[in-house]
Length: 413
Image (cartoon, rainbow, N blue to C red; front, side, top):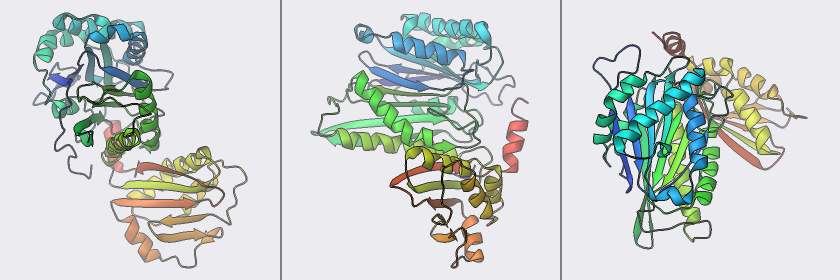
């Protein structure tokens, strides 16, 4: 970890409350105890959409939350929605027992609230392959509900943490017709990050009024530009989920025909990027934050092939950890990315603003000392100009350190 906690203040969103509790779910009890349960309450009339992991071994709570969201009807929106989040146990790779445990935890919360269990959605993060200790959740369900507060975003972000070293959350605001629209979000994630949809867990809400169709359109757009552009280790989690909710409490209704729609979409995208890049800055054992821009591609797919080939190369990542200006590793990653008919003579590669590769080899203006100086920075950019089209894509990644190995070798101990 090489950042200060970015979560200095999160603005409450009208219609959203968070509750937290300590259930002792982790196999090794924390000392002192740390909250490991969070509950998000969305006021009646809220719209809620989500995207989930594409991992075939998706966790039981992923399947249940996805099915419950799909079954919600407009007529049911007169009731509140509750999102139950636990850390310390992924409830993945647990078969039918895992599904029963996830439903049990939802039922426990629903009974404490006095709502329909269909309105309680489960989310989990932590160790894969271990049974969810539902009795521990039962024991603190009442405490979880009694702690619900509009100001508990930070506590909720902390309760979701596993190998995260800092809680992650941001807020942004804009004015529309003299009214203030607020967007706030929190997320968790530090390892097992190449989402292929979202990140490990993320929850974003706005007090604008947005119908389900437009809300899903927003979510898909924002995820594509943020959580689907980050990688720590190339692993897609079994539990990834990203939720976007609109509570309709600000007195402003938005859709894709509204004059402020583009501005709101840009605002929301920036918030998603804030959250996604916070994960990279807190990547397990990371000391470098690396931005990879691939320019001049025929299409997005080939730009991303090149970007991820570089971003996920262990040789490139370890070179950055060592501050070693071994630029040949970047060159090799670009060459094996799988782009058809790639003309290496036209490709230019930059470290920050230093041209390092041109005409298939070392640039004539290359300066080794300047390259080493750039490699020693915490924030580094790589630009790869394919010069074969007009499409550009950006990916964020981290270096690969000894600490990453230690963290994951000791993860269950």
